[in-house]
Image 1 (cartoon, rainbow over the protein chains, first blue to last red):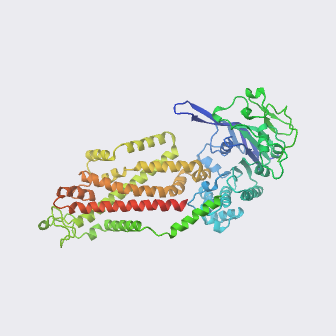
Image 2 (tube, rainbow over the protein chains, first blue to last red):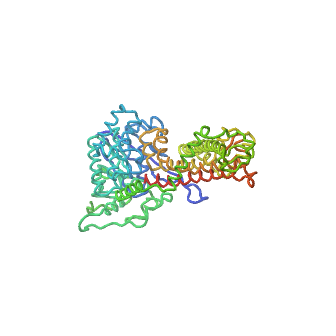
Image 3 (cartoon, chains in turn cyan, green):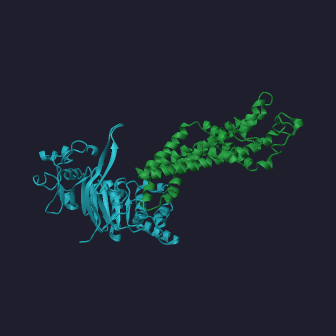
Length: 330
Length: 287
């Protein structure tokens, strides 16, 4: 077994917000006691609906934000504080891909300048070598010299995402956090970018933290996945197991919602209501107001993680009783 | 979807490139160029010394054989005085606009970078500046510290800085929150690099347009202060100063006032028109 490149130990992050003009400040727990680990060269997917704390977890994993509690270990050591020189040097080893590539690129600089920028920033190689390296990296992501000299708005969405990828990979980082990298792209381009990402992962032995709400992409790219609900992890284990045989009722609802071509053979679980307000967290299990298999103890007692024989951990009171009987996988 | 949007944007850009510049804008640009040339070469092209007296020809009306725009009550050539006035007024307005833009942008970036207390303090200063009538402020400063051209320019440089500060702060914060600046920071770039190489070029168009708004305002402010006798002091002359001293002869020799007044109106109007057009152009070019 290879070593963990990234470990999150019980990290929490809360923001204080005011609900009204004169109301008291209320802490909102965006991320609550999340523990994850990512092995070298593997992909860990983080899944959940909007507002479940996926992106915040990703930003904490990268050290862009400091957790209120818990700690982040990258290659066994804690991350330095944000915006210190040590933190800046760490950026060569960990990088990020964004949801909206147009927003992530500077509109006034050519693609080549921007892909070369990390080398300029960290003063790697000589000035002429930088251009050669940048062009080689662009070539590796499938962009040619004419793309290199154009501005971001002259490229298509997929090409822009490739440019962002090239910029992130030019320093050959060990860890790449992808925050919904394909959700802003067309389906046809999504596949290209995902395939490119997986090829590059193989070539560069990248470790990926892949944040997404698209379970089909997640199944394709990741070995392990964690399902988040309202800042907490509810189920965590191998992707194939979780998707073919979800145990937590929330995971089951997510999996059943994935559209399948052809005749619908399985029942779709439609969750009632909205995801609750993180500032006003339900007591007990946060999922209980929407849970189809809710039990009396769910309303008062918060479930703890139990590890199932197949290695996954689930936080649900109903797991022992509600044995998954039929295969509902996608 | 995204491609389509980009395509239409590219199409519009093509259109604007080929669209002809409006006549009002080209006339404004020519006029501004003319004013700048006059300001630069003031002492070379002025027909007389601006303080030279021609006592036999006092209060000569325009189109006098020796004085194209006439003379004032001391027989000083209006055209020469006007040319020198343009130089001083442009110097004051340009210096002040640059000071105000640099100071305001720096404050805005500082607010966006440090947040917290620093930001609150800077915003408080900006609110104070916006709430205080600038004329009152400059009157008191000039009354206490006397009047010298550098001090005057510096004082005018305080005019309007809060606008740049607000613009720079707002755009820098939004760029850092989810945009390119956040991405560059994540690459490990230093704040200096983020602000100077990325944010500043991206918001420059907005700041330049804002400068074209402040520039005429400073010319007007300088004119009103000089008109009140607190701006540029004789024997030095400026547009407002000429206006102020000309008002005593408004009924007998209106040309003393008309010449600088016309120049103030045409110049400020040209700059405003040009700025308006520039805003349309620069915004479109990037979207």
